[in-house]
Amino acid sequence: MCIHASYGNLSYEYVSNLRLFSRWAVPFFFLTSGFFLGPKIEYNSLDFKRIQKNVSQLISIILVSSIIYLPICFKTKNMPKNIADLLVGIQPHLWFVGSLLTGYIAIWYLYFIKKNKILPYSSIFILLVALLIDSYDQFFHKNIGFFSVRFVLSIPFMYIGIIASKKNIYQVSNKLLIGMILIGFAIQYFEAELFLKLFSYPKIKHQFLIGTIITSIPLFIFTSKINLPENRFSEWGRKYSLFIYLYHPAIYFLMSQNLNKLIPLYSDYVMMFSPIIGFIILIALAIFLEKYLPKLSNILNGNL
Image 1 (tube, rainbow, N blue to C red):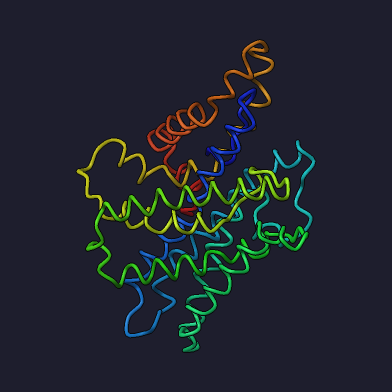
Image 2 (cartoon, rainbow, N blue to C red):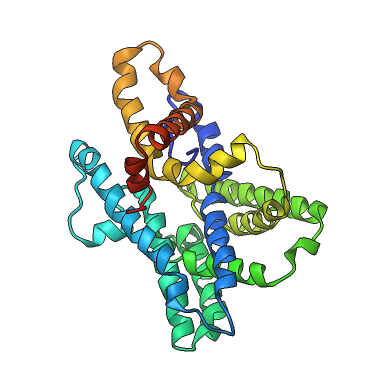
């Protein structure tokens, strides 16, 4: 939500750094998906039946969310041009769903044809290419499109998550993990500052840096070690995180379209807090739908 928000009159430098320090989120969720995929891999084999539910729900999410966002696409004159747009997402944030679907199928396929031994090498290759074309292409005075490689980033991070599920990661000390997280953030900030000074490359354009990798992996391990008792926040996270992810840009769109009309003098000030306001609206909406319109709630979450 921090990455996709519009912040009104908030300082450009602050917004750039806020988005930069939120870039761990996408690798983190790929890692998590791989972590839960790991136990489904037995005797060096991955039966498609074990991921059939995941694949089915992801396809349903793509279809349902595409329908929901069509009015916004029409309003912004950004209608999908072909069927491939559904897979990559008719809204920018939905690429994650298609990428995750690609990760599941690619990993299953490599296990099915008994070529899963190439996963570590292909993962390293994808990570290196992603680092090159997102930002490090500036050293060659090029601006190579990042989207095509970003779309397959699910594969290396899901693979790392699979490895984590097979190893005893809980023996790693919390102090070491926290130290690595802080080092990752520092390296990411240094990278962004370096590109800004050497090439006038804006911080806000960075999506994937070396520091992003260094931050996301120990952060994932650290959070997987935390064992908290069930509470209201963990319940909301488990139930509604998918809903919040899928539909937060729709809430942002409605806010941007209507705040100027409702409170013209304060709209920019309110938008400074758009992630918090949007989060509260989405939680309330998710709870309402689950309680009063459970069938619609299921459909919106891809449970057809």
